[in-house]
Amino acid sequence: MDQVDRILAQWHQERPDLDVTPMGMFGRFGRLRSVLMSGLDDIFRAHGLSAASFDVLATLRRSGPPYALSPSDLIAWTMVTSGTMTNRLDKLEQAGLVSREKNPDDGRGFVIALTQKGRNLIDAAVTDHVANQHRLVEGLTADEQSQLDGLLRKWLAAVAPDDA
Image (tube, rainbow, N blue to C red; front, side):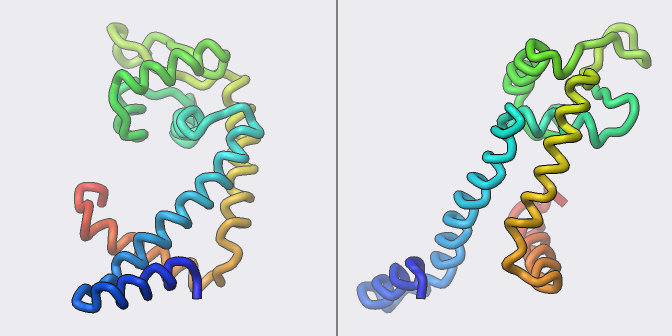
């Protein structure tokens, strides 16, 4: 019996008319999210990054050569507002991790490109990040991880069909 079970037991005692089953899932998801995010943040901090800066650098890196995207593409992939993206890009540019360059396909616009320093940093950070993710899920077997991933995909599609 964990803390969530004890809370549910109290609700069953006080409000037996309510089915509080979802409350247990949300309670565990909330606690799990907190623990997992803390574990992820440790790796980001070890590389001098935040989750936000990691997100931008990782998006550029996984886009493939030339590791450059338009600001609107970055916004779409990271799902943040243009103001938020501008703030992130300004900080990353000041740190020498990205540069703003003329868009080779459209001379009127520009793209955000990883610098060599940025690419080196994100390559090291993502290597540690993936190893850390494996560590954080090692309490589940490979089959359980696959089942959980499928259930989460199904649930997400049901509550946020636009994410599919």
